[in-house]
Amino acid sequence: MNKAFCIAIGLVMLCGPAFAIGKKDVKEIIEAAYPGAKITEIEKETYKGKKIYEVDFNHEGQKLEAIIGLDGEIVKVGIDD
Image 1 (tube, rainbow, N blue to C red):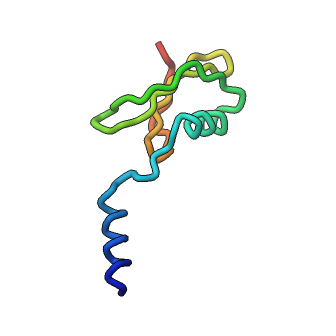
Image 2 (cartoon, rainbow, N blue to C red):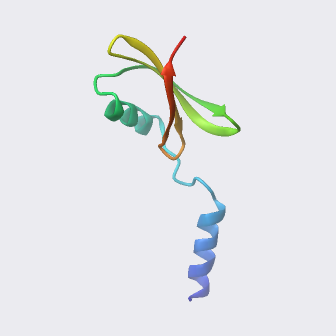
């Protein structure tokens, strides 16, 4: 293999979540999973030692809270107290 190509692959692997999502992406993820959701707050937080987005939203009369990983995965959704 080409040496430069190998170095580039190594750098991508070392950089970790280089393709982290932003607040706009988080909004789209929630709206796709919960059509009609009204998002009230999006904050970047730490959950179990990892950076995540915490999203407060209303859906079908319930106040919910979601945890979204920087990779776009919905980690957890529950009732917001």
